[in-house]
Amino acid sequence: MSPSRVSNQMADDQSRVVDLAIRGIGVEYPPFQLKPESLDMLVDRFYEKSPALSKVQAINRYTGIESRSAIGDHDHPIANGKTAPSISELCDLFLTEGVALSVKACRKAIKEWGGSVDEITHVVSTTCTNTANPGFDHFVVKELGLRSGVEKVLLHGVGCSGGLAALRTAANVALGASFRDRPARVLVLACEISSVLVRHELDMISEEQKVAIGVTLFSDCASAVVLSNGIGKERGGPIYELMGWDHVTLPDTEGDLGFDVDPKGWKVVLSPRVPELAAGAVPDVFEKLVRSIRPLGMGDVPSAEDFDWALHPGGLTIITGVQETMNIEPDLLRASYDVYVKHGNSSSATIFSVMDRLRRMGRGKEHVVGCAFGPGISVEMMLMKRTMPVEDPLAEDMPSEELD
Image (cartoon, rainbow, N blue to C red; front, top):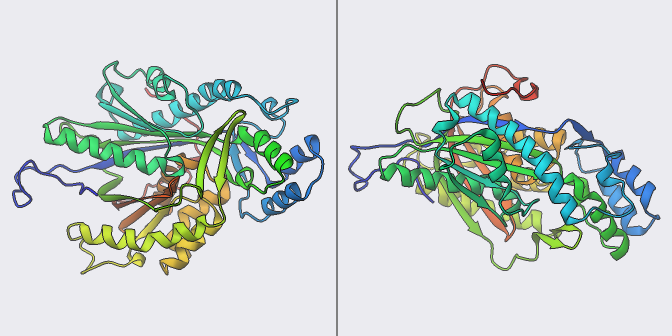
């Protein structure tokens, strides 16, 4: 855990103070929406009825998701071949569709921040649905026209917690720049193209007769933020000020949550224990984090209900599990519920979408808890202070605009 205010002297020497703040957010969903019946259509086209498939179809009708954002509908060629697409085909599609979504999300974040692409000093990216080398971030940086000397980091193996893990990494990078008296404007990017794995997942369910619910939850999205360390000319106002963060891995849970490489793509690992394990870990991480940060101006030790919660909506039982464990009202999780219902779970890219949605839902709590769960099982948590909400509540649905 690291505080967002740092000094190059001892803690009691406050002669130099640097703030970490998110000053731009961009979210880009693809244009297609997969309704629950879309999965049924693919099952009817390519598979014989079986107990496992019937069980998955039944679960699909009760996830609470109205639609999942995707790069194509159930008639997309990638989902309608004689066989499931190969890893090579999936990679080519990601480097086309995923990079395009990422560029749009980054341009939105940069435009809101108000700076030039030449001012971007670092790029921290993540995905779990592509493993190309060079990574997809290389092609995004090239398309954006960033300097050839921009410092890049691409995170792998962090799954749904990737967005917050990337932001945590960016924060530590920015703190390092602060100690060196250097400005840091870090572009943080997450992109996932999960919908194209549907045939591989359905093949596995049909052949192995094992229930797997990834095909009922996952969707496509790219999202980005610009993080500033406050050194040098600043542009615009802060959206979220970072106050502190923590990362915890639960012991002996490697087999409960994962995303394994398979000859035909990737296989979601999601055990029935995940909601209980994830929700059960939150209270200790939250209490430790709150106590470790300098006074928040919220009384002695603030409680969970003193915060709005930007929780990664990994599934309905994960959201409700955290809600019950932390004894908070659903309204404090309103942005997580809203994104889950309208778009589904876009893995690492979802958390920035939740944070973006939260600021567009009117006045709320001044402080926000960001939280996500990833393979390991790992818990990412971040405390933030937010500024005024944006004026246009419909801005998230506006079409992408190019940078001037």
